[in-house]
Length: 65
Image (cartoon, rainbow, N blue to C red; front, side):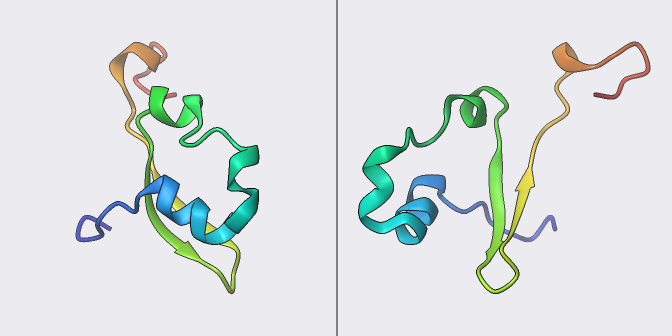
């Protein structure tokens, strides 16, 4: 997965949603706050692979989310 380049969220959803894109806030605020990156989108499987960093400020005492 380290070799995959992040996909632009606005471009991806513009292609998927077409004219309906104006009904959505892109990128969503949660996407930006959580520093998400789209790695892969598979149309046939309706699958979206994302990368989310485990930021220290969100970790529990065990170092996980």
